[in-house]
Length: 176
Image 1 (tube, rainbow, N blue to C red):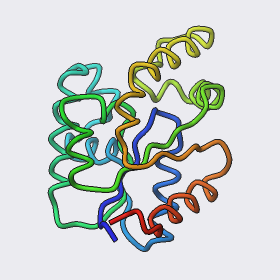
Image 2 (cartoon, helix red, strand yellow; image 1 turned 135 degrees about the vertical axis):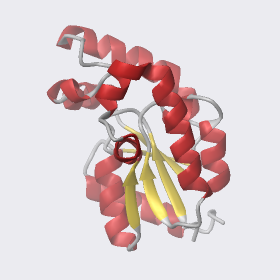
Image 3 (spheres, helix red, strand yellow; image 1 turned 30 degrees about the vertical axis):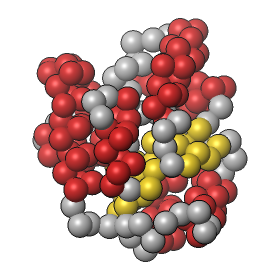
Image 4 (cartoon, rainbow, N blue to C red; image 1 turned 90 degrees about the vertical axis):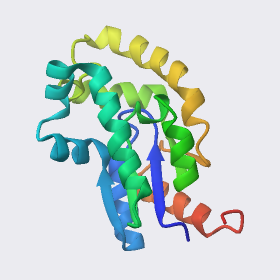
C-alpha cells in the first residue's frame, strides 16, 4: 500500500477527524498540516495571516507540505482547505501519495463552519448571512483543484462511514 494518504477538501469537511480515525485504524501517524505549520513557525495560523499575510502563509504551506511528502515517513495528512489550490501543490500531492477529496454538501459546511468561524482566518469576519455565499463561491473556485484528487468520497454521514469508504478504496484492485 502507498505509504502516504492525503486528504483534501474545503475547511469543515472533516479531514482532520477522518484522518485521525483512519490513522488509528491503519496504524500509521496522522498529521494535520495546519498544526504542523504552527509548530514549525511557532505561531498560530490566524497570527500568521494577520502579521505576515496569506501569501506568506501559502509559501510556508507549500514548503512544509513538500518536505513532508518528500520524506520516507508513512502518514496520513489532512491539508488545509486552500492547500491544493496554490502553486503546483495538487500535482505534487498526486505524485507523492494517494489523495482523497472529502466532499461535503454546502449546507453541512455552512452549519459546521458557523460554529467555529473565529478560528478560521478566511471567514472570521463574515456574519452568518454572508457565510453561505462566501463558501459557495469559494467551493466553486476550489472545486477544480479538489477534483484532481485520485479519489472522492462524500462525507455527509459519519466519520466511521467515511473511513470505511476510504479503506474500501485503498483495498480495491484499482489502487497500485
